[in-house]
Length: 511
Image (cartoon, rainbow, N blue to C red; front, side):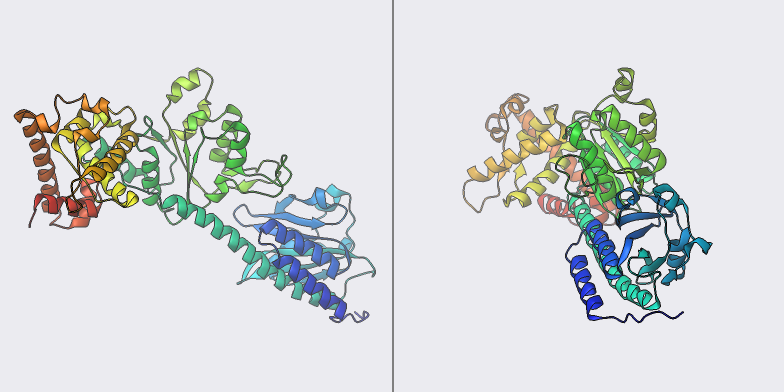
């Protein structure tokens, strides 16, 4: 077909340069796509332009950006993958011109009918990066000509290649930010310490369910280690390479919790100047940990139920469903059955969450773990506080074991942090190893034993010796059971390898 020559003129090149600057000037995906749509309409002198992106997970084509009279109505509209001229262009990875849309069989009229718009001519160019179709740029109805020409197609292909790189870069930046946040969360991972029957059972349950995709509900009082258990579940799962995103549902007011969980669109509320991803999106491909799930308001419980049932959600102020490829682990210190009876928690949500419950025992029911746990925590604290690793005297250990710890492991750590600081500041001489004595513990713990170390009875001293002997026996047995493989022995004891080495040295253990 003959058409007046429109080579890449100085005007067109200038428009491409401007488009490139606009695209590369913003790293957010939404802003990038909108810049692409604006530039496409300007470069090709068209009535309207849009960017349609492929949501491969949901097999949908979605209008992610648009300019023109119907732009606001078009944003968020979606239809099945492969549908229409745009779907065909994505599949073939080729730019195309349709100058008589009324006679084109592949044209999808549903969008025109919905918006009351008449499409005469279409120019479509696929965004392809590293052999992957990301979407298409679609340009409608030239303003000053009756139809698009071959040179317009060539111009669109140059532009689409530039746009594809920009979109890929923007998506990469967004993905890296998401992964970085997940890595920051994951870096706080710790160990579940203890050799008591209760903790061995917890570790066995975690090992059983971690490799699956089942939703897990962690139950237990505050400070029992529910978040550590959640991190262990993630670390032992096939999602361990993805992010671990934790949120305390009790820490945010209702007005912020919904936005924090599901994200929001620009303009969703006062102050929402740009789109923001929620925790579920940030956890994509990984695990989300919903702590204090019993505190979630009923209206948000409905939306959580949808995520668990449909594996999709809507951002606050959004109209497009977003797929959720995420494992859900929830935790609570409440009796959810009682909350259901009081009308404060949805029964259907409870059933969705309670697929695999795990009870975390309070510290008072596993006092035999306190020597191992205490020394493990002191190992962490010495690193964090940059202080020498202190020992624990028999009387101090006896007091710790006699206390009921209403705050559980969290309270034990707080007590030991204070004791570590006091012991290191009062030791006699820099060469002496610090020792935590009864005097370094809070007064309510001192009351748990009859006398301090200085006035300890032979029976009390003997009790401390028995505790040390018991720990020495446990460590030696673990080493022998694992042929003196320190990594495996430490894992069996639920302590770090550094802590095991400390005990080997302390007790003079030899093969």
